[in-house]
Structures are given as structure tokens and as C-alpha cells.
Amino acid sequence: MRACIRFLLVALVLFTSTALARLPAHAAGNEVVGKTIESIIINGESNIGSLDDDDRLIQVFTYYSDRSFKPIWVRDNGMKSKGKVLLNFLSEIENHGLREFKYRIVDIGALVGDPHPRALAELEMLLTSAFIDLARDLTRGRVSPNEVTKQNDISVRELGAAYLLDGAEKVDDLQPYLKSLMPQDKRYHRLVAKLKEYRAIAAAGGWTSIPPGKALKPGAKDVRLPLLREFLVTTGDMDAAKRPVDDRYDEVTIAAVKKFQRRHGLTDDGVVGPTTLQQINVPTTKRIRQLEVNLERRRWLDREPGGFYVFANLADQELKVVKQGKTIHTARIVVGKTYHKTPVFTEEMTYLVINPYWNVPSSIANKEYLPKLRKDPGYLQRQGIRVLDKSGKAVNPYSVNWSAMGRMPYRLRQDTGDKNALGRIKFMFPNKYNVYIHDTPSKSLFKKDLRVFSHGCMRVENPTRLAEVILGGQGWNLDRINGQIASGKRRIVKLKQKVPVYVTYITAWVNKDGSANFRRDVYGRDETLAEHLLTGGRFAEADNH
Image (cartoon, rainbow, N blue to C red; front, side):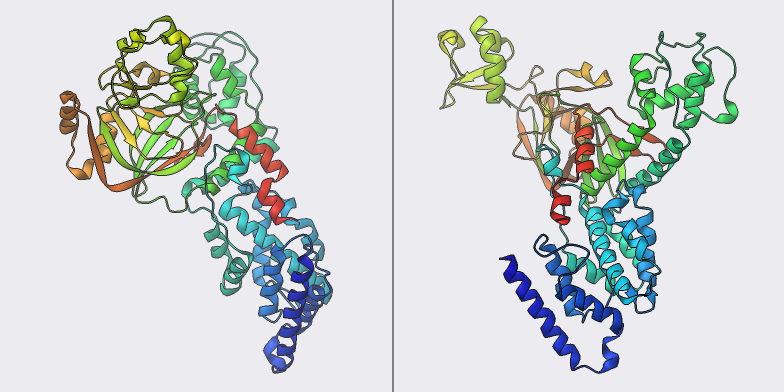
């Protein structure tokens, strides 16, 4: 098959060459380098791969033959300005969390300045290969999200080599075109700037770890205070000009610690206990890796999230409603336990249910409720959960020999009310995971730093306020919502306009004021993604055969 493809490609090249021969001499332009490129392609001497290994090159070679082998990046007397812009951009690519070696910058550099036509032709091929890899990495990410974990249900855009090359060739200024390929979200560019800053900190030796000891509380004396203050100055949490020099844990240092705690999603009590100390002692290199993996996640995200959407960050356990680029509502959420991880996906919210029933999932019915029914047939009744047969008829739980049941043969449904596991409101965006946002009777969980307690769904704080924001354009104010709740009647409210819901996992971001925020990798997804970025993943295998 590949031999046939090679034959067809060579035939296409020869046909184009014959057609070129009929054109006036001045029409071809860049004749010497163009002829050398033609020779390289026909003779299978390309330095960017072989057709026997990489069918992607069919697009590249066909593109060159269609344009009479006219180079994009070089001319007979050296590199074009377009090639210089690309090479300069590649020299900064590490700040995007990408790796220079992938784009063969060393090989490119060895050819720069060599006036020989063969060297120029090989330079053209290497720059083309580097550009395609770079463009694809910026538009879709370095690795396939679904290959990293099956819990990443993300579709990324695929752009063909010929399409990308055509775009680069047509523009007069390559710089804006390169910028258009990367995420346009300012959050991405703030991460790029912060990664550069943290690399400079690492190059200067990074920060020193703080030795373990008793919890550091306001007013206490501690020999570790100079180290702590040095760390807080390095991370930008303390003004170097205002750094205290005494041996007492003072208000200035406490304020800086609180700022650090807020940036890391911790309770800002100013106490340097085990959890805060653990986050302080995360090495600079690990923070850099955290920034890199989150740049990759930003490249996976939708380029056009829409004017009104919900953004739920599982790592932060927080939800935001965004309208025209501005956050108009935030709320804490409880997410899936580490063995019931909430997946990453995007769907559209289509309706809300006020005073919902809870149809107990079969997994919970079998694993959790059936063992309890064997011990106490009245357990479910006290929770307001009905036992229903296939026709929907209620079954008396005391009439069933639960001890003889290997699996739950009935459907379990919890009535509306204060005990309902879904609370008083659920926000529905139908998806294959049966994951949605809902209220909860367990309000105390929202006070915790880590809120990883659910079976996969997202429990939201202050659901009536969220409902008011979502239904604001449909005549549902807070009084009406509360009135419907008070009625105790179940009601479905359809949305006039579907609302995109982005369920994400972001463990590092940078605020508008330049402060870096980090969250604990509760699901272990940072390390998994970092490993895939190191080894390349499916995208790299497909692109570099």
C-alpha cells in the first residue's frame, strides 16, 4: 500500500515538474532551492521522515509539488524573514511547556547560514516539519487527552499539514498567525509568563525547604522564621522591603502566610501546620511541572466557550458562572471521591429539577444499601427511600427476604424533602456518566479545604442562588425559586437557551494580578499527564513516525 502511495506521489511530482518546464523561466522563482527540494522528495532523501513510516508526509510533499516546489522559509540566498520569525518563536517554546528537542532546533541551527542549495533545501524541510509539529501542539495539545486517562472525555481539533502550511504561506507576517494557533484565553498567556518566571527562580537555586517542627502560630518564636520569610519573598507573598527581622511570628509574616494559603486553596488562618508546610515545601521543579501540565490542559479546552457558561474545576472544587468573559457567580462544590473520580467532559445544561426525586444508582443500591437492608429492612424507609418493582409499584421492605438477595432486584427512589441526597435542586446536562450538579443536605462539607466526598456528581453550595443566575432571564427570581421549594412539589424547569458546562481539572492558574494559584492533585492526574508529556503519547507517535 505504501509502495503504491510512493509511486503515486512521485508520479504527481513528475507531472508537476513537466508542467513547470512549460512555464516561463521567471515564473518559478527560487529555482535552485526549488529544484533541490524536488530532487530530495523524488529520491526519497527527506530529512524529516520517510513515506514508508509517516503518511503525513504525503500532504507535505503534495503541497510542495502543487506550488512548484517553491520554498516557504528560505530562498536561494538564505533564510526568509518568515523563517527567522519561526526560528525565533521556536527558541521560546519551552515557556509554553513544550520541548525544543521535538522540533529539532539543534539540527535547524546547524544549517542556518549555510549557503549551499542542499543545506537550504534541508533547512526548508526541517522548518516545515517543525512548523507543523508546533502548530498541532499549540492547537490540540502535545498528547491525546483520552490516552492520558479515559476520564478525559475531551475532543480536540485536528488541523491537516497542508491546511497549516497554506495558512503560513499566505500571511505576510507569521507572528500573528502563530499566535492565532494557540489558545486565545488570557489565562493561557498568564501561565506562559509565570512558567518563565518560575524557571528563572529555579535557575537561581529555587527556594529552600522549611524544616519540620511544631505548628507555627501567631506570636510564637521560631528559628525557622528567617527561612519562611525568605520563601515568602521569593514567591511574592511578602514585600522584601517590609520583611521583618525579629524572631517572633508577627502580623506582617502572618498576612503573607495567609496570602500563600489562599493561593493554594487552604484555610487562611495564618497557622503554619502540617498541610501548609507541606505545600510550602513543594520544590520549584514540581511547581514548574505543574505549570507545564496545566498549559497542556489549556490547549485542550474549547477555543470558543460561549458568552454564558458554567466552568467547574474539580481540582479547585469550585464552580463559576461566566457571562461575556466575566465571572458573575462562584460556589464551592463537593466532587467525587478518589475511587469515584468525577470525569472531565463538556455538555449542555438543558433543564433544572426543583424538589427532585433521587433514583438510586444500581451500584450504590448493591454495594451500600443491600447490605444495610439485610441487617435492617426499615433502614431505607427512615431515609425516605421507596422500594419499587418493575411496574413502579411500592414494595413493603419487610416483606422481602433480603438475606437471600445476591443483587438488588428492585428500583430504589428517594422522595423529595430535606433528606433527599440531591437536596432541593439538581441541574441537568445529560451525559453518559450520569454526572450532574445538585444540592445536598450535607452542608458542613463545604467548610473543608478538600471536598472530595461524592460518588461522582458535583454537590453545589447555595444552589438556589445558582438557580437564580441560570434562570435569571426566564422570570425566576429567588423568591419564586424558594416558593417552589416550599411547595414540596417536584417541578422541571426547561432552559430557553442551553448552557455549556465545562467540567475541568486545573491545578494551576494565574490571576489577573499575576498571583499563581496551585491546587493539590487530588486525583493524581498531574503525574500521569507529566509522564505522557515526557514519553510523547499518541499524538507524538502519529506525528513522528
